[in-house]
Length: 425
Image 1 (cartoon, one colour):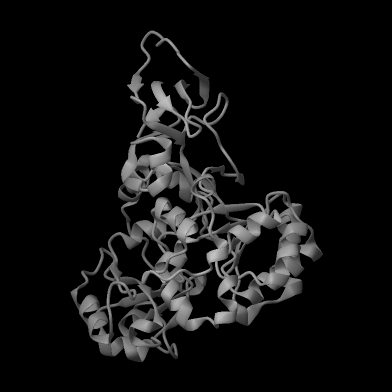
Image 2: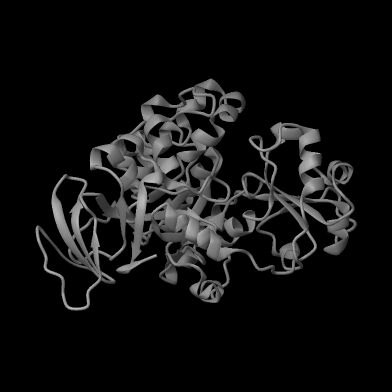
């Protein structure tokens, strides 16, 4: 494909020849015989976006699941109506996602039994770590004697009993393409090695997989020696690690484990939702890449302001502080646990506004160009932005408007054409 009259972010007007890689970028290029030509007519062309941490199968499953988060159901009655009105899937389960205790308090099997129809029901916490299953569901899983119905997502002891249902991967992939997403990093731990190949042509994006180096930590099981040993084992196999850290305790233990085991150049810390001041120098010294989600400030910021002590607000979802210190940093959305629109995450990084309009962590705000670049890293080098230059991957996004207009609103509605490997998708 030849893209003519494209405007780059620096304001230069160029033509771009693109296939699997960008072949040439020049002021004027003549079409080759049989070459498709796209006239950008002055529109802005950028390197396509890469979402550096999401859960593709879970996000697709969420497309046809009941949403029961604070923004969707306001109270216990609303939760009951949402569950009663949800259609069971082909597997016979009613599946709900996004729950938080602010809706109707802590859930267990007894509470859920009182709220749900006489069908197998499972409700996922918005963190993605925990499911609550009603008695009908527990019976189906062979767990009728389970004390509370609260089951960890990563526990294969019960998830293996679930029927694998078909989920709308193609619909999700098209939605991501409409955002200008040309690549994704699948962050689900213990993902089967053949899972991606089974997705076939249903996912148009380039897919990078973190497993087998992805590890989720839990505060009630933070064994330093065991974690360090696991990291060392992965490194001996030539595999970088990506450790899920959403609490200060998890981050502190991960830093200590990396010191004991040593660091692979492509090791990552996922989320870093809380970064205490005295951890920043450690992250710099280790050189480990942090992949974080500023969108959670915009999505959950008011809840953080209620639940987290004021003295710790500045530690939440840090961006500017880490960049100033020299920590390699990239962004992602963590969909389906976060909104899958990367442009919304960019706006959150720039403005740090909660749903009510309050600003959470004003010292962590960054410029729009910085926020955009954090979604443009390579799959195996997330902190280094790709550019529109010869030799770079042929993954591009055409945006309506000038660079100044694009950066002023960071609106996904400006996406007009998404190109992956030189092909319009």
